[in-house]
Amino acid sequence: MKRSLLLIIVFCFAFQISDAQLWKIRRWEAELGVGPSFSFPDIGGYTIGKNLLGFRDLSYRQTRYNINGSLRYRLSRTFNARLSLTYGSLHSTDTRGSNEGRDYEATTSLFEPAIMGEYYFIKNRYESSYLFLKGKGLWSLLKSLDFYAFAGIGGVSYSVKGNDALIQRGMEPGGFSVVIPAGLGATLIYTPNVNFGLELGGRYAFTDYLDGFTSQYSRSNDVYYFLNFTVTYKLKSGPHGLPSFR
Image (tube, rainbow, N blue to C red):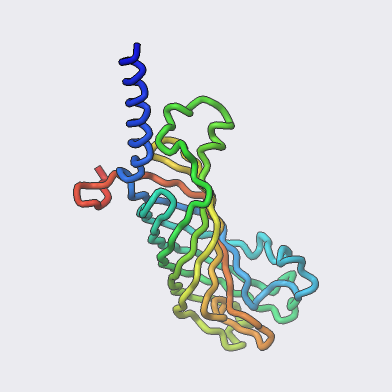
């Protein structure tokens, strides 16, 4: 009886150690994200004082899309490094804003590479215990959630297409700028290999010409946001620490 009890204790202790270190076997993660994009440039929008916290600027007319691919490397259980590549589109128009008489409109195509760090301020304790949690209901799913914050540095190459009114005003056709990405996200462990997630990230650009235009009343550079629904696949680490696709 004592021997059996000892074996059980040793097994549980060994399982906890292996459970805590299992993330090291799958340090690499490949992620795909898609979702809407929003921008707050000098074209469009409502006058300050008539626009509660900027919510009136969020409209279907101003919304476009983005698609993102990322490769993530787990430095520890709660810290990750991430390489992100995003293609997206932004749109701005004076229609239904505070400057309808100006009648400017612009569509911006952009490509954004970025390097970011992620910190998981809420990390689930069941990362490698999916088989034990499967089928136990909503509470088990909630315990499989992770919440993280991210920030980094990147660049954006952008091209602007404007209407005749904007072109006659002297539109800037495009360029390149440094951007600072930052935001919050959540992931749900669906299987030991697959996560689903939701991420909201803002970008502060070191330019005021993402819409090809800047106003004399502008007080800051352009800002844009991505809201992404993500799918993550965990890759095994190869013999030299590189990701294995087998």
